[in-house]
View (cartoon, rainbow, N blue to C red):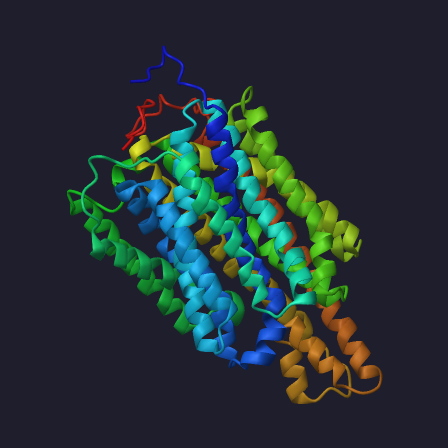
Length: 526
């Protein structure tokens, strides 16, 4: 048993090589969230999906990931994290082939759903493996920084790789990228990755798994509908239904002898506070990246690949911030690092808020670079605190909850802050409309910037150019106001982080925190 008087063993070459292996599926996990966007025009022309089907093709992957994370994390604790990872790799590879050669929209939706379920095994199983492979706190923080950087790298290269593939091959080729990586994982994983599971884990409660799946899906779906269509009864009722199911889930966990999620984990302040801060970080981050893409393409008129290139500094900033976090936290408390990160993020948002007076891509690059450098250490440290503050045999559950909090925070941020941008845009567009624009066209132009561009292209004379300029200016001002709000939220989140985690030590040394994660017990090895 490792004690506070005996330093935990250091990871060796095998563990670090194993970390490189498990970083590969994490890279694909985030690539698949972005790469499809470039293929939409080609697959739309070939498969001819309806508007509703196209939305499901794009969204179902993220929905299924969010809904299955908790269950998959807990399942890894029961059957073994390596076994779950390898099963997920097989499923991910097969679903990728099915998606690549789908000949109908329905088949592609089903394949994307299967990809989401398989993808939900990757993040919690790899993160929980890191918890057990790297027992030394400083090494574990560094490993988690590399793990998070792999997601950032996938998000950065996804549009670029997708663009290159689509230049030379058909739309399905973007899915076949996954196959060789999964084959490599299946070949090396059994030799480089150790197996860990909870030897005392009970049976998986299927009812709890179903409740968590439907509850998370309902809430995420409702928030997405609000972000796209505004607040309405269907979306609101969906969210309320999801919240009601979540309450039933929690009540069931409190009564079960062998719950899907042990609620006693939340007694650890490091665990519960880190989850809260993680939600806040993703809340303020996701909406900004969404509207940055729209600004680059719809306001500045960039092609998707060009916009992706201008977004690379932000991705590299996140990678650098993730890698620097372990070095900083060695001598500075996590609370202070997070407070400083939120302050830097607030400065980045303030820079984006200047877009109305300093338009252009350089303002975007400067703002998003500062934002990424600030948020990356926060994500790294909250993730580290979550998985390090629980016993190793519960690392899968903790990993699933960590990833679910990120998905929920991002969806909530897009819904709330996205609704703010939409409301501001519609208000400004309702003030005036160039002569020569039809009533129907004016209504469409007031709805979204994309619709305004489509209307402007169909209006003859100077009215089209005037409408285009009006819509772009309205969106830019709305984006600037949202960025200013986000800057204030980031500053407030920094104060909250400094307060909630003020007694948590640096370098993952928070084992004295009261709760079920106290101490650093030996891993449960099968």
